[in-house]
Length: 402
Image 1 (cartoon, rainbow, N blue to C red):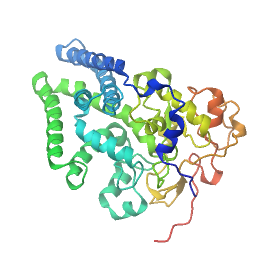
Image 2: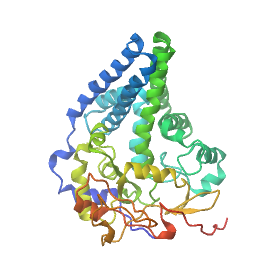
Image 3: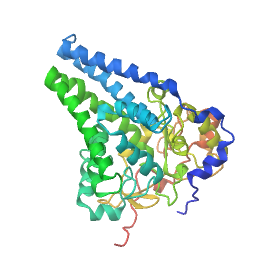
Image 4: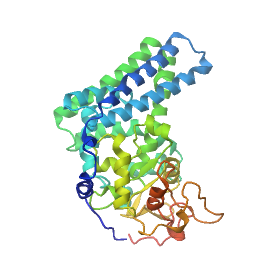
């Protein structure tokens, strides 16, 4: 399927004059999240170390600490984009501290995420967050193992590992793999390794001083929870989208909707299309950007509830047969990626907040209730053809010629 592609700067240029001037100013008040999360984490670890909680309730402290870990991660992401503080030194100081739960070096993150991922989004073998093409899958045993056994896709027996350990594993892979790429210079790679080693040594030191039960309930289990919260968003950001030749955020990205309280706690991370248009902008302004996108390009804007996007990720394959088709290499079944819709709203979208598909009908990915009804009706994806829908039984298409 041919795709009408536009570079990110074309969209940004169209919208720039319609946005209020303060959207590009740092959202400095979001720094208050730093002491909030630190206090929650400190309280949970103190409760575990001092024996305030019986062992049977230690999970409650793990839950509190894990949510603090996840919150710090979202804060680090926005900070290192320059959306909260200006000045590289302050960004790396705040971002590096906020990334301590995952022991991610801020210089590694800026190179990996800001420069490569945002600059080359969904370019296979270039973007570290992009899933492989069929050719790469067939030629690389390590990738085949990751996809088939522990990947976030249908049929992988250890697929939940991608949710509960995925961010930790990926950040480690990118750091160790930086040696054979141009991601970091030799000096920067050494510094990134030192920063990561320092982070891990702090957590291991806590275990040595406070005991291994505190390490388990105060770090390991919270880290798994934080992985799940963060990866639930990361896995849905681009995994259902096509591989355009141009870095087109309205084609290669998906926004997800969550309840307002979750949007508040995650700093609006679900507004991912908007984020790829203006990476340096705080997500507190993303709703205004979303409204403008929908007003200009209602047929191109992609959004769905987080739960539905995550379910779809885990019920579809993560290998690309071509730019707009996902394939299960073992069964040869194919699923289409998300695509722009017709400009005429689908007739079944009269009330997207309450409309439910009839029994036996195909299920379309609708926008979440956080969007105004008129916006949702204009922007919600219409159903794909029954024989090629992302949600019902996938079509069994002919195997391509090798």
